Image (cartoon, rainbow over all chains, first blue to last red; front, side, top):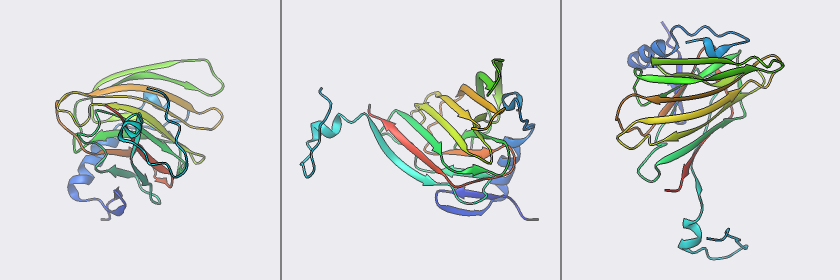
Length: 41
Length: 179
């Protein structure tokens, strides 16, 4: 399964397993809303 | 010290250069459709405190920019307020033990916006931030958030991770405040 992209400096590549695990932790519970994004997370 | 008044071709003295308070450390261009951007070599012993500005560029959808340092995803605290263009309602937030300082920056299909001061990221003590982000769109949000990282780790880089979708284009500029 293709992992999301990550940009490190000027290089854009697929995330490593470790980066992907971190990414999922960082965005978990984030529910973007139109009117009050500060409440998300 | 008087404000420097440089002339074309002038040989600048160390004293004049040392009086410059804000120094551009680096500029990093955000690529196309990326959900996460690492800015390496942003912090060093050269400066204690920094100003980071993200401008230009767009998001694929309404989203937020979550800030992390190094590979750390524990121990973030954020406290601040949010308002919506067209409303006087103020919404407050204060959260501890987070995986990032979330939504410190904001994005829309019109713009990306984040500016924050960062105190002592390279020093082996608490890293503190004070930031601002807005969606330049009617009915959308403006956030003012402060936070800190509950450890004494020294960091050289930071990461912006979007809450959903991707971001494209624009510049991340890192400035160091002269010690």
